[in-house]
Image (cartoon, rainbow, N blue to C red; front, side, top):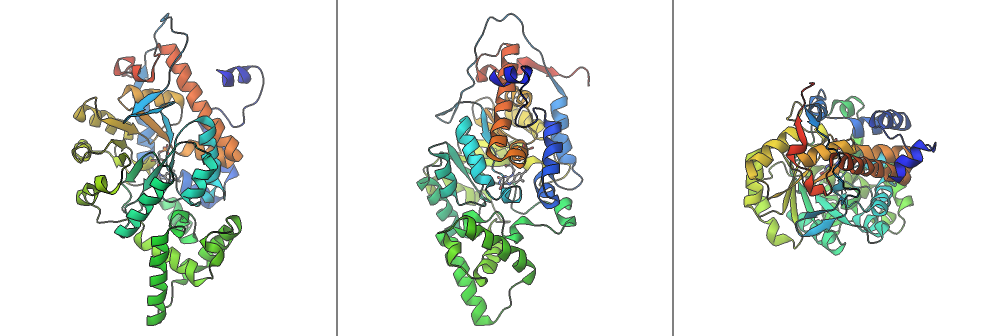
Length: 419
Ligand code: FNR
C-alpha cells in the first residue's frame, strides 16, 4: 500500500503507525481532564483490559501462494454497500480534545470514505457536521431521552440531514462509574461540552424555556456548580458558531440548558416497549448498540431491527464486564450467520478488525484511536489513523488469502496455542 511504501522510503507518517506510541503522544498533547474522559474507563479498568486480552486469545493462520493480487474490502449492510468494513464510532464531548473535533472527524471520514456515526453528545449540531462532510456518509446515534418529543425531534433532524441509519445506544441509561473523571471533578456535560445536538434542537429549547419560566415563578435558584464552567464554554461556543441559538442567549439560558440536558438526555427506565415504537417512528434502518448478552441480541432481532452493535462502550460503563470480542462470539453462535452484527470496543489496528470479522462481525466501529489522531493533528491526524487501520487490514487480507471482506471467516483463526 501507498502508506507502507512511503514509510519504508523514509517519509515520516503524520501520526505514529503503532497504537502504543499514538496513545503516548496523544496523552502528552491533551489536558488532564480531556485525557481522563477520552482514554478513561469504568472502575478499575478491567473491562478495557478484557477487551484487549480477548484479542490475544486468538491467532491468525496465514495462507500462501493463493494467487490473489487484489482485494475488495467492501461489505453489504442491510442493503447498503460500505467501501470498507469500518465506521467511526460515536464519541461524545470531543470538544475536550479540540473545539472543532466533530468537524475534523467529519472531514476525515468524508476524505477516507468511512461512514461517521454522529454522536448524540456532539459539540457541533448535526446539521453543521453533515454540511462539513459535503455528501460524505453518516449515521446518527441517539440516547433515548426521558422526553419522547425530544426523541422524535432528534430522529426527524437526523432524517432531514441525510443520516443513513439510526443507532440507538442502550448501554448508557446512566453514566458508568468513572474514577478518572470523578477524581478530577470533571463531567464534560456539566461544563457545557457535548450538548450541541440539544442546544440546536427546537424541542429541547422549548423544554429549557419552560424550565426557566417555572424557575422564575417559583423563585428557585439554579445550581451554581454547573454555572461557571457551562457559561464559559457556551460563550466560546457562541463565538465558534455565530448565528446559532447561542448568539441570542444570556446566562440563565445556558445554565438551564445544562441542567435540562443532565436531567433528560437518557432514560434510566428504558425498556423493550420503548424500542418497539422505533420501527414506526423512522424510515431509517435501526441499529441497537451496546448488546452483550445473546438473549438481548435475539430480543433485538425479534423487534425487527436491522442490526446490532456488540459493544461494551469501550469499557466505560460496567467494570469487569465481558470482553466485547467474547460477547461477539457468543452472540454470533446464538443468532446464526444471517443477522447483521457490528462490533466495537478494543479495536486498535487493522489486524484487530480482521480478527473481529473472522469471529462473525459484519463491520467494526473504531473509537478512541481516531480521537488520538485528532489530539495530535486534527483532521489530518484522524485521517492518518483511519488510513493506517485500513492499510493494515488490507495487508492482512493479502497475506491470508482473503480476497473479499466477507471471506474473512472463522477458519482463518485458531485458539492461540502460545497463550
Ligand atoms: C464513547 N462512546 C459513545 N457511544 C455512544 O453511543 N455515544 C456516545 O456519545 C459515546 N461517547 C463516547 C465518548 C468517548 C470519549 C469514548 C471513548 C467512547 C463509545 C463508542 O461509541 C465506542 O463504543 C467505543 O469507543 C469503542 O471502544 P474503543 O474503540 O474506544 O475501544
